Length: 356
Image (tube, rainbow, N blue to C red; front, top):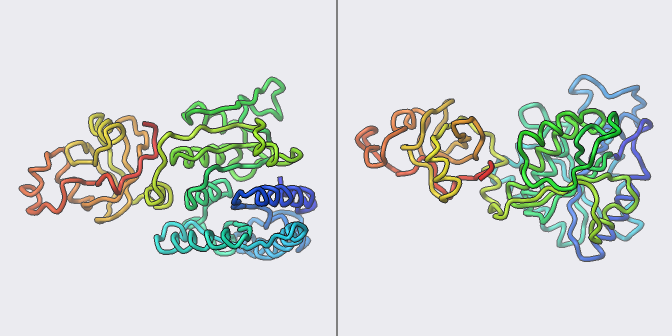
């Protein structure tokens, strides 16, 4: 949406900037995750195409980021607004201290009336620490700041039953109440010019924020006054319905920012207790352990159908869990010689991210 063959789409940059200023003047705080650095860098350097090698991509993004921010500064200055640049990697948000520092910085900027413009730090991101796309980054920022809504503006009206660019009979899906395999399949069939991963990365972002109790909208960003219309109550795009119960900030961090170091499989009884009963995960419900991890590690847990239910911080190492899985809590000490906890994952350290 923000790019075209010749580089940045300055008309789109100016239009989005104007609408964000309208929102701010109406008393709404806005966090802005923007793409465009690579396109700006390609134009500025006179490159024929996006480089293939990672160092060249990172260098191109470094050049482009300066140009991108310069255009935003000019656009927002027309409406007496200041902007700030934040470049982040997933490593920044998986470290609890840096996560909180980023959160505090963003809160301070908003309190000053400054518009935070956020992008992935392409100049240092490599496979292990990259968000992978701005869809994922926008979801992480939404969760970081406990935002009220995520609006994902792109070059398509929303989620369709088919790719509308090749299927005239494709129909827009106005509301998605739950993101299951059917929705992911629809999204997977709409690749291409929508960016890395196409529509599927947007659906994955929607899964994250709605699981945390935050709604999301996918809409076409080049429609005139799209943000103004959305915030005036007009229906556009696809609305993703959030879960009724919001995840606390710390549980969002556990569930969506930490990279799981292993996997615990649980039986149906344990799944019901955790998902619907609000219980901790006990050793009696564990049927298998995968991977090697230490006490305090983030570990994913799944049901018998291999569906991801959530992530938690474990009280026992993988070696000890293998010894006590299937046992009643009263037998832990007999098995290990000690019992620091009844729970393998305490409820307070457990984030449910799957369907309840």
